[in-house]
Length: 408
Image 1 (tube, rainbow, N blue to C red):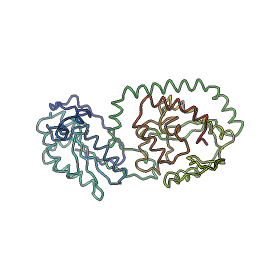
Image 2: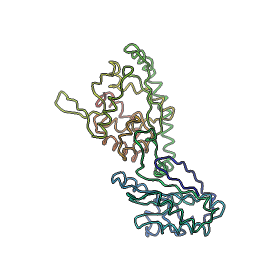
Image 3: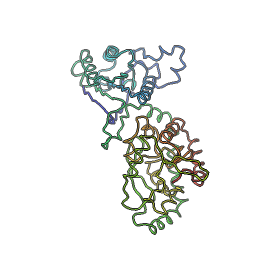
Image 4: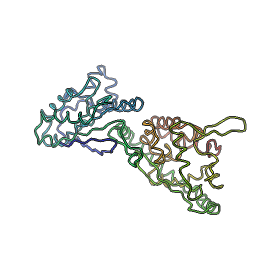
């Protein structure tokens, strides 16, 4: 048996349970509608063959527990028991039932055991483990299974432990890594909307090509203006974080002088995210707007100020969309050092959707919102996402860009 202790490390587990000799297939473990509408819901949630909760419900509880822990800071532990290799060679029968029956003796009343991946992976959610050593829980599970399985059978079982919130060192590069085993709802949603996401990607490809063609005069004029106004390259390339924290090279037209110290921006981001403060700009009518970007930044060139105000500096991102690192619509991709100051729930904005050139935040506030408000908008977008919503945002973007509110 392999015992893995996962803390924030992506563990790519792929299972195919179609070939397994499982007989208890009367219930659809992925059908939310069935178990929610069943007259005896409590009984229907259990897989009677093994006494485990069905996959759909178990994953729903995992998602809810994760969101609760984001706010309460009360850690929980997800234990995954991969029995795929064991069943493939030994069949289902008594072995599987013995394993399933051994799980309740390991749990408390507040814990839950169920199918993480029906027929392949059993899961246990140990809630509120603050002050409890998860390694001890792992060893206890191993010892219990060793009482019902022989040494050869134990070798064919993998146990992995996943703690949430994940513990990580914010000063190290691996701060961007996320344990995707804690987010099965994301893969479930992608599977259920496979055709819609395919159409979104198709729209991204067509839209980015169309954008490059229609704005081709700007791709000729803007580089000349940049070269005439300051020394340095035309394009500004920066490492950004895409979906799931994957890094990519983000493209913009350069709007700053060369060799600018990014410490100013780092300090601003730290203050803005952590303290929820923002700069204020006095308007002629005496009103004040909250600003997400640094206003009157001396590092910005004269032509750069115009490019930022008009959002023309964003045009090279059409190539990011064409490559697949970004989408036309989605949350803005953060700079890696921003993530160092994220709260736990903030990270959902880079997990649930691919980053975009424009998004719900840009058309509803741009820089005139607090960071928390921006994140909430991004999360609401991911929940309500549809192709129609993307189209509405795309149609609204030109007006917001021309009006210029919040652009700096």
